[in-house]
Length: 218
Ligand code: E4P
Image (tube, rainbow, N blue to C red):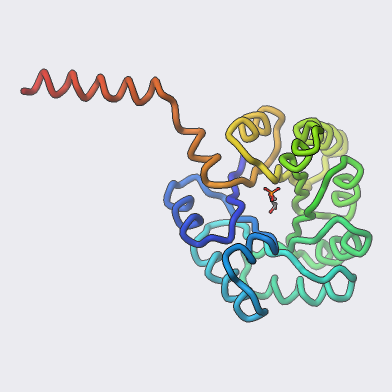
């Protein structure tokens, strides 16, 4: 399973890259705003800065919601760097835009997926990735992991090349369960990735090894 970090924070992207397990980055307009990035030139410069850090796909979301606007914006974003994946919302014009970019060989990530039907539509239109938001489904008392499972079955039934990018990941169990189901990618915070490597018995065991070594060598 590929690990993407879901942030526009350059320091966190750098830290995840240095950890050696990072395969890409996802951003969205809220995450860009959180970093105080605004204005077309600044937004584009920030995407270029992210691409300079990471080895892998970097999702950059369009703001337009009409077909022509999404095509114009998406083409400008894709021209910034070959790592850019154009992130398109799951709306009717978005599906048309996915098809346009797919025909042109430009990678896409269809975002705001909350049902298997939406994922199927995006895959039919040739999306590179679909992003089901599991955390936001959990937030409304609906099991987000059921959606990952359902999309996995559908994509496998028809051998769709579209990758399942489990998004809105909130904690390490989300990552483990997505891996069990067979999501192709997960995107989440650095904290969720780092939580995977922690275990109290590891810390206790290491302390004992070091203590015994120190005694034997004193
Ligand atoms: C995915 O691409 C989105 O940016 C993201 O995962 C949304 O996560 P949230 O529900 O924690 O905002």
